[in-house]
Length: 258
Image (cartoon, rainbow, N blue to C red; front, side, top):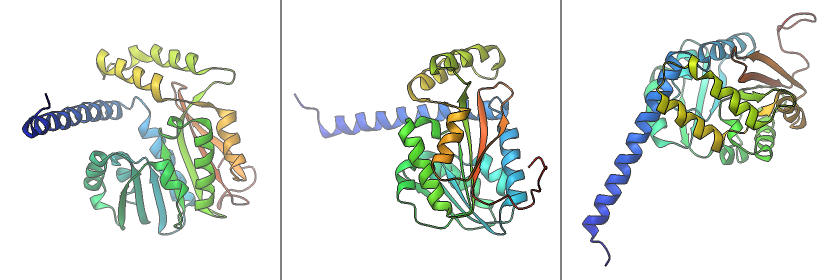
């Protein structure tokens, strides 16, 4: 026998409450990870800020792909000469939080609820800097390559594309990379055993890292004239890469370390 409309409403309400509870748990875990700097957010966003200070044009247009709650981006950008911010994320709940975090940004802010890969395929607006952190690796190899092509097209002949992503050692496979993460459990005391196990399950299902050579090669194949690794996380699980098209980055002289 079919349920009544009231039964359906109760089921829908229960599903919504369950989804919200899950989101809240995951958000709390994420914020504990950030607070303990377990994924080296402080170093990564410090490097990104330095790149923007040194190389981004005045009133730069910043595209934050898979922005999440945008808390780290907001903290970094709040005192910078940013001209425009656009954040893309598939989660409406995250975007509601992002709107609060970005409220004090000294520029127009736009948040778009979309699959970031699909959004980038259609992107046709000028942008100076594109940033994606710990999200590009969720795509299959062809999807990663396509997004890099789309980023190159969006930036035109200039601009800066920066990614922070997990990376395999050369000759390492995904299984060995996952095993390396499992060995970090003793360093992750800020999260519970249940939370760590949940992360491992997520990574097994959704994380597809590439080697450094492959990350750089995909950028070059996409049409970027320069591709460089600029940071390795101390636990060696991830790296930061930058891609650009200038003959040289403004301010960088031959023989310099920039």
